[in-house]
Amino acid sequence: MMERDELSAWLRLSTSEGVGRTTARRLLTAFGSPEAVFDQGPHSLAQHVTPAQARGLLAPSEKHAALLDATTHWLDQSGEAGLSRAVVPLGHAWYPPALLEIEDPPLMLYLLGAQRWLNSLNGFMHRERCLAIVGSRNPTPQGRETTLQFARALREAGLTIVSGLALGIDAAAHEGALAAAIDSDTPATVAVVGTGLDRVYPSRHLDLARRIAADGLILSEYPVGTPPIASNFPRRNRIISGLSHGVLVVEAAPASGSLITARMASEQGREVFAVPGSIHAVQSRGCHALIKQGAKLVESAAEVLEEFPSAVPTRPTQACEEPARRASALLDALGFDPLGLDALQARTGLDTASLQVLLLELELEGEVARLPGGLFQRLVRA
Image 1 (cartoon, helix red, strand yellow):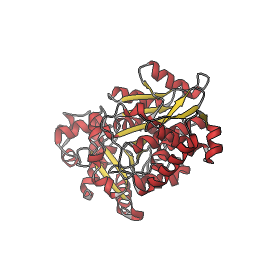
Image 2: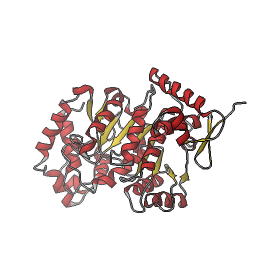
Image 3: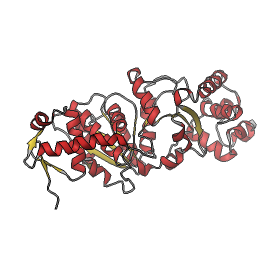
Image 4: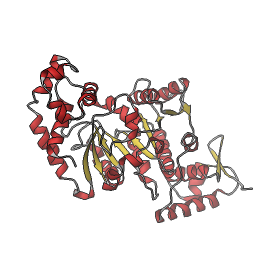
């Protein structure tokens, strides 16, 4: 943990009036540390910033003392409910290396999660093991179900699922990752949020946020106390894409934050994947536009994994034994004739969501083939 004086200097640099991230990074390059920046006089600062910016640096904000106290208080709660808290500035050993590759890396990161993930942040957060999943805040039931299936299958292949804790597709991505029953050396999911970590937005995701923090991480570049300001959410999207090797878009309107994330991913040299949908659905038009622009059309998790050569299935825990038994029972119920979902539901008694997840897993394992007309057929191994 940073000493109070060092934390104070970082907070002051990040919140000085008129000084943005680009200017702050230029000052850090010139002087080495925030403390050194504030040791400079007007003449020295004037060689790197405008006179107005120099005045902002030399005169601490009236809100600075309150922000320092609030941040310290937030950090002092580290360890409560089994969760740790940390502030990680640019250049810190825990800073994710993937974010150093992007044009506009965050100056500071605020983290909430299990201590084991914070300790090894720069180890597991290599982007080759992370996939972002984003999409509409108002998805169709099919879009939500597709997201749950993809997120669970990709998590079980060893990927950390990154998203933004928003309504709709984001929430389904986190839920799907958390539903994967695996024993892994990486967190299930990372939520990159647009507020301070002392609050949850939207508030209805309070329970989801707690579950993410317990089995993953919640991350923000915004100071403690930052409310949900509309402009912060598209800005944080560069972090969602920056942490990831690729971005999967599941349902998106033509003008949406998801397309902003996809554009940022492309600019950052990341992969972009899109799930196609009905030509009559507004939520599909954004994905179709991405596909026209060169995004990879994907219909299964396996097609995403083709672009992740380092992804490896992780060792199942005992919790996987029950799904394995259910998968075996599903194969027995399927037999070797093509069957639709309704017939399989009647034979197995499984709900639609569970049945589709099991079918996707069996499809990835080469046990089942998806046929035209919504039919499935068991494959005979040679």
